Amino acid sequence: MLKLVTAVLLAWLPACALHKRDSASSPPPPAQSSSTTITAEDIEHAPGLSLEQLLVTRVPGLSLSRAPDGHLVIHVRGTTTLLGDQEPLFIINDLPVDNPVGGNLSSINPRDIESIQVLRDAASMAMYGLRGANGVIIIKMKG
Image (cartoon, rainbow, N blue to C red; front, side, top):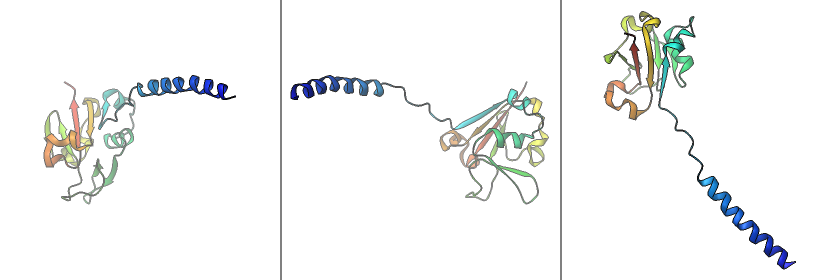
């Protein structure tokens, strides 16, 4: 009986060591992206939505509210801010714009947009400094 137990243990130990070696060599899970990109195709597939609604439905973590003057405010990093400003920084064709023309995105024709990228984490927004503290929305126009 002792010989049988010893033989089973000797056969089992190398199998356990091999199993651990195989599981340790598996690739790590893919890293979560800190930015989300919406392409022109995504915009075309949602014809009835405003750009604000499209952003909220396609980008996880965004929320939408109304400012005291009535225009829609997109919240990238939550609704509370340090300086009282709630709007993210908009970059349109590499030019920073504090608020889009007219105070909302409806003044931009969706058919003219090539892509929209939303930056949420501090590392991605660092190059925009304090202006990007509430998030950064980068809009690339066609042409």
